[in-house]
Image (cartoon, rainbow, N blue to C red; front, side, top):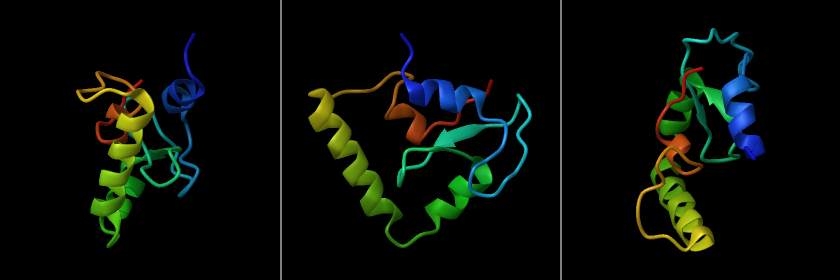
Length: 87
């Protein structure tokens, strides 16, 4: 069964932050702050925040602790915080 975040990411047609309408070919990604799907323009704004690097590290550490894995997350939850998705 697909997790909710996967459905939300795949079906995102309007960015909840900036209201940008997304075509199927548009990339979407999960926010490292609230784990909601956002457009790439909003992701670029996240990356400019002074706490982005530290928050990224915390998110990865949290994911590793919760999943008890010390290696990649191929096309999974952690992966989609750093790699865009297209429909």
